[in-house]
Image (cartoon, helix red, strand yellow):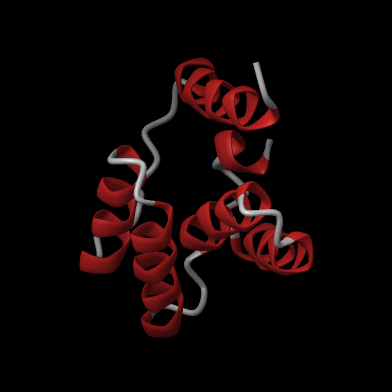
Amino acid sequence: MDSSGIFLISICCGGVLSGQEIKRPESYNYLRGLEALQNEDVAGALDFFEKDVQDNPKNSYSYSWLAYLWYKTEEYGRALTAANKAVKFIPKKDGEYLY
């Protein structure tokens, strides 16, 4: 299993273990980004998440997905920048994404 698979599994498991109901973004671009990601459309997902952070510059969840997608496309500098922004804005009670 590659590192992206481990990342996704940790995200899924983290939500179950935390036991808290965390309110995640419901903006159009964020939801379309998740949809594109599910359809394995990396370019589309990047586009939607980038639009979302332009509209919502403190959306740590979009930054988290951008970090994952940039890492997956071997854009390591961009991945690190997005990860740093994600960590800065993630709500403290959201252990799943803090992990």
